[in-house]
Image (cartoon, rainbow, N blue to C red; front, top):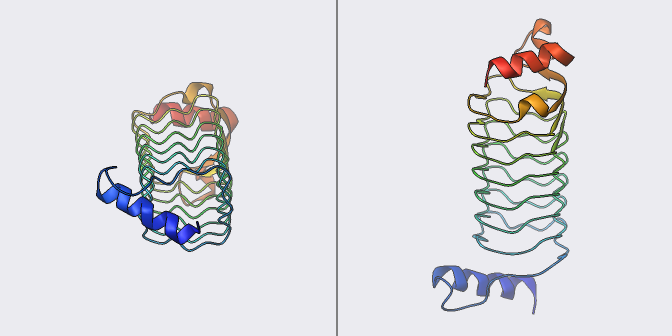
Length: 198
């Protein structure tokens, strides 16, 4: 069965609330460079899939199991990732502007150099996540957990941090909180700024 057929069966499964069709459930799928823009993949289980360079604009991944998937250089602009499992996922240089990651689990995920401007990360779980050179400008973090996460070269200008948790145990190297050189904070100064703004 080819991918197109599997997607059609999954669409039927979604539309019928599981009474018809077949849920997409595959491990280690090779979807490098695929174009699935605006598809409804909610509920799919595709852990370990390779989606590097894929076009996934406004895809609905609600509640999906995407653990250990690779989205390197993929375009997830406006994607729905609410309640998805992205533990151990690779999202290096991924475009996620405006994506919804409400209650998304990103434990141990690598978000280095990802563009996450204006993302909704309320109640997201970022334990031990890697955020190096990540753009989080305008992101919302109410209730998000950062225990053990690494923040280095992160742009937090205009981000809403109130209610975020675990930043006291995060590894904070340097952050940018505004447009001027004085808004580039390092070490203890960066950590103090974060803790004052949660």
